[in-house]
Image (cartoon, rainbow, N blue to C red; front, side, top):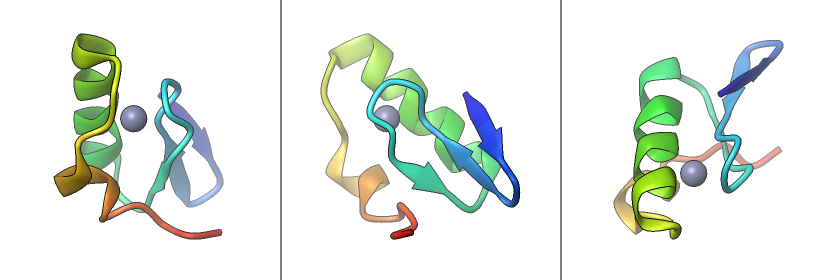
Length: 47
Ligand SMILES: [Zn+2]
């Protein structure tokens, strides 16, 4: 997981989140299933 300023990026799908926990959750899911969880990506920040 990468942090750019105030945001945290999922290294797998490149979605960006405001909180670290959600980004980590996304990354775990992405790594495990090689696809995104809509329940998580809907929380992503649009930059
Ligand atoms: Zn992801």
